[in-house]
Length: 339
Length: 113
Image 1 (cartoon, helix red, strand yellow):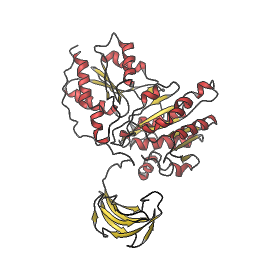
Image 2 (cartoon, rainbow over the protein chains, first blue to last red):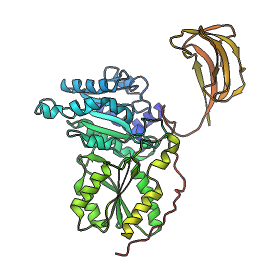
Image 3 (cartoon, each protein chain N blue to C red):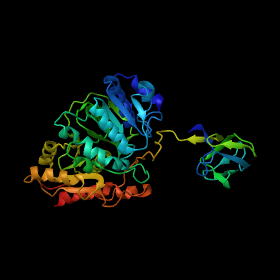
Image 4 (cartoon, chains in turn brown, yellow):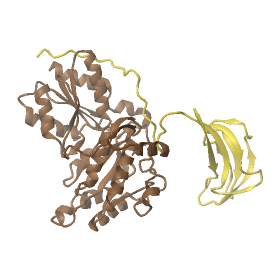
């Protein structure tokens, strides 16, 4: 792994290279640590081990254990420390090892990280980027496949982003860490090993913009993280039937690109939101509302949601029954076409 | 397929035990062993237990003689294991496998409008 990362690093930034998302995030962290001495990386196993997914591989060796370091197994303390560091001028990039282990840190995240800037009338901004390996798809044990985006998006003061490919992961992480606001950066675990040619580039789009990853005219599929790839599979299959689906990668889950959603759905007249999180009060409801409020007269069918079920995330061998399948998304598309 | 040597150290078999005595090896060097097959019987101050093999592979080396006292954390056995080519999973979970041809049952009808 280290060899692969080293080889990738020798390539200049403008060149197209093949990288996995986990390597791209490693590259972004290295860029950030090198450009700003206030950036600190810490969390469980982040330092000596290089992260359970090798995301911080080699960074402690390169930048030292004062800037890249391990913490006790105490999520609340990790986020509390990030708050203190941010108040003292640092730019912390804490990692909570898995989505499900963010729950013990919710008090710090909601009551301190998200509010400090507001509480102090701007005197203590929180330039914290919480790296959170998120979502399911890798048959991991309980607490390792959760989708917490609705919880964070519902918390005023936080920004939330979920990249879907290595190039996006790189530029969105640069953007998140350079932002003076706290950002929850959700890394889709199922995409960590997904290697593809990427051009590592500086962020070009503003925070809060979506992107169309496949244009189409009959319906818009809205997704983020690994579900973008599920939707691309569905769009490919739909094309066999003569149905052209547009796939919109929302990527910023707070703020949501309301204008981008409206622009797409005003053309396609139909929309299906796909996410891994449970249905009820999930972010799909927010997306559906934003579309309906803006495109009511354009819509040819009600916005459909294809999501996980309202149950705790299942054990690994059952997760393929829980995550939106190709057929469930196709059914939803058909419902909008036949309405 | 690439081969890799993995050394397994004596774990703490109770709560706060510091050592164990090797009673009997249940494998020899060069022998193939499956994951969870009986590996070695050891005796602690609490009990005698058989440790199952944590790996599936070939036994490359035994680091203690029978009757020898081994401190917790000291190397016990080295395995040669085969590693699949391609990306390695993290410490938790598996690398998702991409279906070559995604299966579908639902067919779509294009809209008429």
